[in-house]
Length: 91
Image (cartoon, rainbow, N blue to C red):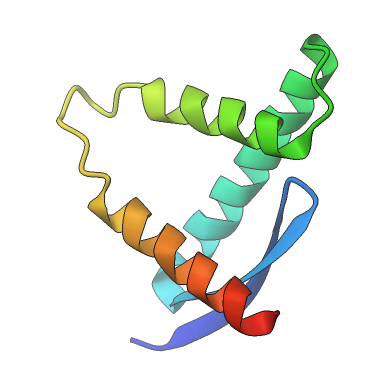
């Protein structure tokens, strides 16, 4: 399956990422939902630091039960590692 390159903006920072074409809409939707959650938290709490807001929003999503099945974070951890490597390469 073909990969597509995206530039996601999350919490005011841009992250270049390559995803399978079939996952593109899911990734864009997830980024939009995360940004919406960050904005909501910003309005309700006296927190302005984007990193703190990102951490709080991420924690909220991770706490939601996913169909009462055990959660495997290995894929998320790998993608975060990939993003970190890509961001480091850009600097």
